[in-house]
Length: 381
Image 1 (tube, helix red, strand yellow):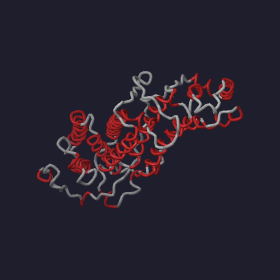
Image 2 (cartoon, rainbow, N blue to C red):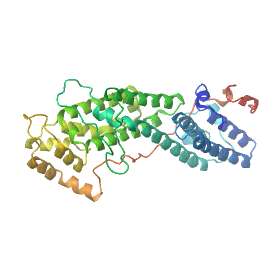
Image 3 (cartoon, one colour):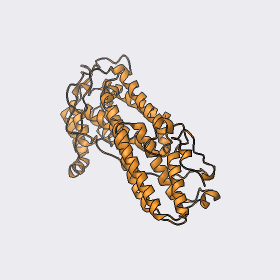
Image 4 (cartoon, rainbow, N blue to C red):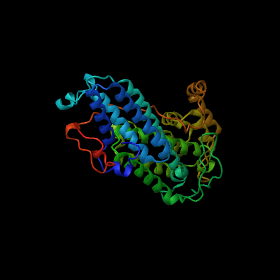
């Protein structure tokens, strides 16, 4: 059921089929009141999922997605058929008849939820590793707006900062192709997640995490590159980030209420700061506009800012002092909380797995022959 199942085969079957089969076995053992075997079945299933991922799926997003989807489907089944009224609101009369009668398996929900979190974090980690090499080139160096003068960033060599912020810019990536390449990667991830029937809420949470990583990586790099800190580069970066926002809207990632695009606000506000007028009467407006940036980040960008030409005035020390005075309370709060200049690229949002009942009637579920010849090993009773 688990160890030999290939994602390619699973994608041709009903999403969640392995979870449904395991749950039907649980129902049979519940029906004959076999306490010992029902527990060894669940524990064995969990153990085989972990072993399969550790052995074959460390860097395989599709295998991990297959088992995240099925782990969550089994978790939803344990809730939906537990007999607890709060999980029966959307169940049919037939589904309520199929509820477990002898065993309380609620203790296994926590175990399955923990396994799902582990798989989920494995998926986001592999995705982050895949987007990392092209991140800076795609979001900071790609020039989507033609005709902006004096806008040639120097390729940055070496490390882009402190521990946990390894953002080396690969010299072999063409900035013209990097943004399209990043969007293609995101689309590929999205197709894999959908193919195995992962709940839309979970897909949105995964991309919320990836967008945070893209934001952190690009902002950290910007904060360490004086050649990036001028108004025309701000326009180019804002254009690149807008492509990410549009991609998220096209995939309907915002429909689940996960606020995926909001995770990009720090880098968006950094680009707005680069483009903003910087005279003393603009101080209140700039402070209000940059509410998702840390005070140290605002000051750093202003200190790195380079005028586009001889007609644009430099940022005066008096202007920077006025910004510091205006943001004094925020700065003190950040100092108290030991907030750093660079964003933490290893930060993870808490994961939620909302209950998602199925409309499947087990009496009508047929096990396909392609599923490792399972119909010869198990039969419906």
